[in-house]
Amino acid sequence: MNPTLFSHTTYSLDHDRFQALLTETENLLIIQDLDGVCMELVQNPLDRAIDPDYVRAIQAFEGHFYVLTNGEHLGRRGVNGIVEKAFGDPALVKKQGHYLPGLAAGGVQWQDCYGNVSHPGVSEAELQFLQFVIVEMGQQLRQILPNLGMTRVESLIEAILLDNVASPTINLNRAYEPLGDRFPELQQAMHKLMQDLLKAAEDQGLADAFFVHYAPNLGQDPNGQDILRPATFGDSGTTDFQFMIRGGVKEAGVVALLNRYYYQRTGIYPLGPDFNVRQAPPTLIELQQLILDHFDLTQMPLIIGVGDTVTSQVTADGIQRGGSDRHFLQLIHNLAKVTDQPHLTVYVDSSQGELKNRKPLKLAMVNSDIRVVEGPGDPDDPSDPLWINLAFPGGYQEYTACIKAAAQGRLLRAGKD
Image (cartoon, rainbow, N blue to C red; front, side, top):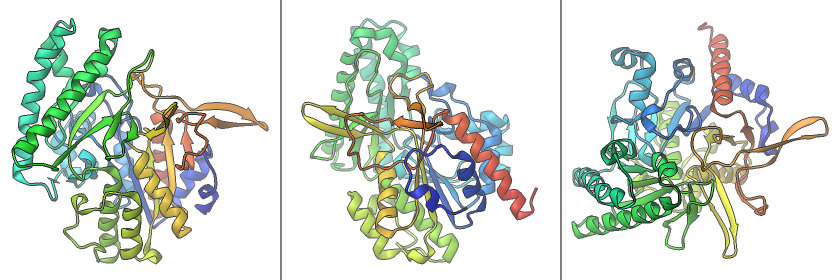
């Protein structure tokens, strides 16, 4: 299957050809987000569930599939616990290598399929400060929530405070409906809390060690800071306030994963064995140039990036483009353009979940075919530089079904079925 069939299309719905491409391509690197892509988006992260057959299918792509998420592998709300619950036996998951390999916490938390976790480039002092952040988040929420009229504060904190090791997060999804018109007040309080925590880090000699990621967001300001997406009627806007380690951004994670992939394929790390996302340059153009300067393009795999969070909004002040997956997908698209190689971007519509901040793809009949006629961005933003090659309007169920079918095909081709 020739990948160029997709490289010049936008929002293709030809899932059969995509499945064949995944089955037949030997030099392949899939880089995939998690929430909303292979799991339903839910208000309470503890309620997330993953299909064990999908997890098994991933093993057919061993060495060719990695996750790239702002969530984490570890902890009560980490993805490892979701996988263990799906199989019902943590010992079996570890023995059979069912953990999802790849980068978490934006790129600073590495894991192999056996659950061996490390934090490349992260100091012990930084990890200890993040433990302080978790405690401080809880204390501040205990002061803020009662003032907004919330009762059963402890149970709510249990749901919205994600005590992640490398990216402590406040997820406000469970507070959106109960607070109603007062939800924007909570958003602003969390925004202030994040700024206070950054100042506390600076006071402890950890200036520039951390940053705050808002999801969804409205892109970045001139200083590179995420722009809060305010709640509006029927749209919760920014719900995730993630206190993250500087360098933990998905676009840098693409380069780190590519460096590992080249080693397993060629025996050489183009950027050295100790390269990590904290050593990566900050801009897309610099990351692109880093790849062009150090990676042998004749060995370049077909890179397929898969995400579900891309936004844009046209306002009186201009166009604001954001979304947690935007930049890593944009890097893959840019690399395809500059190298004339058919790397692909894939969008999974996660608007069918419990969250109220995802815009559904708009479908219509065009020349007897169902097509995507409006993407996740603002329809008044026709110049969006991000090119989405393939879409799954049916959400994570449709996407994971495609992965499972492609995995079966790879096994048959390898004579392993």
